[in-house]
Image (cartoon, rainbow, N blue to C red; front, side, top):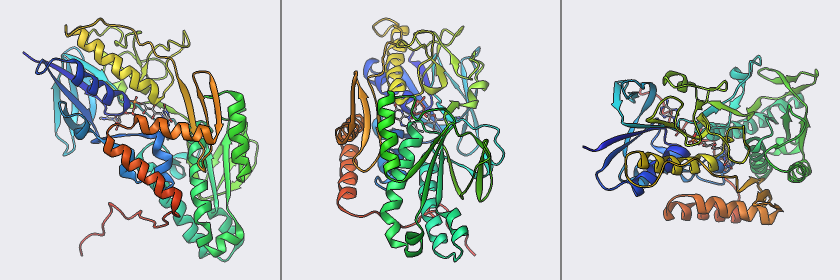
Length: 426
Ligand SMILES: Cc1cc2nc3c(=O)[nH]c(=O)nc-3n(C[C@H](O)[C@H](O)[C@H](O)COP(=O)(O)OP(=O)(O)OC[C@H]3O[C@@H](n4cnc5c(N)ncnc54)[C@H](O)[C@@H]3O)c2cc1C
């Protein structure tokens, strides 16, 4: 009888777990089912490029069916689980409920944006975590220019021409750098806006930007962004967001109609319905082999699992794609070992090799195996690294083409927010 291995979540962790299982399991020894609410892997390090229009949105995703030929893809939303019965509860796209039986379950459901109870935040701010967020942000930014161009009063126009990012981790930094670069490129097409100029602001509640990288690299990134006219305020905690302004806890107010929330992530809330032990932060509690505490046949990886970090004893692995990928590969081998298909169950043993922060305009900061890079070499290294990690030759070529076209030609300003929302038939 073939074993049933079910993977919940088709992001970095789930994708690499499925891919490794396809390689290490003997043919027909197991049925591997990957449950995901979308049929692609979103390559998040390239999301700022999609938001800035340098990359076609289709080129920053990896279609799961194409890359996982021996895995059953089950499109649906995980709603819960019954570990005692070995069942994962999934709602398919048309609303039917299914119980998928498993002998081994790998949970890789990722994280969501971590919001805070700040008045007006949920109503007025945009996240920067999904492909929909990135495209909505680009469309919103262009709409702001279009509206501003029609406004006579300079003070009101300033609200539309001010863009604020809250949270200066790598998503916030890369996001504001790429989007500001894009908007500076297209501003010449908007005569009124050009005369008035734009305002770009990055707010960070902590005392420094990018705690993920060494202070000298963070300082370089900060200098680079300030040089482009981006204001950076550290120790600046958000107090309230309104339709046309935001206020900080120290009483300062910024008139703006675009607030982008990039202040961290938290474990996916559906994890609470899986009947598994969770840490205070809501991540699944696992041991060093990524096995869920008290559940011999359930494993958890990625942003949604508190996998002990081999590099920092006593801490959990940081929520990065690099960790999720390595955990996915290791957990697949552990599951195979558990089913008698070779090897031993081993602990997760990866240490961060490096960090890349792409700042657009051929600038980046990077830290790899103890060497610090900045400027053009770091940018080249970051691009090469992402290119090498993108699965499939066809997709690598598309990325190269997009980047080359962006180097040679100006960017597109079509605002396509109506895509996917056709008018109703009359
Ligand atoms: C803008 C941005 C830039 C980033 N840049 C980098 C970077 O440069 N380097 C780096 O190392 N990390 C980066 N990260 C972090 C990285 O994306 C995450 O750490 C990584 O994706 C975690 O992998 P995961 O498998 O745990 O979760 P994910 O990759 O998020 O995968 C979770 C999957 O589960 C699916 N899912 C969610 N809920 C359900 C449900 N109920 N039912 C079914 N499926 C569900 C999701 O659609 C998704 O496919 C970035 C993140 C962002 C947002």
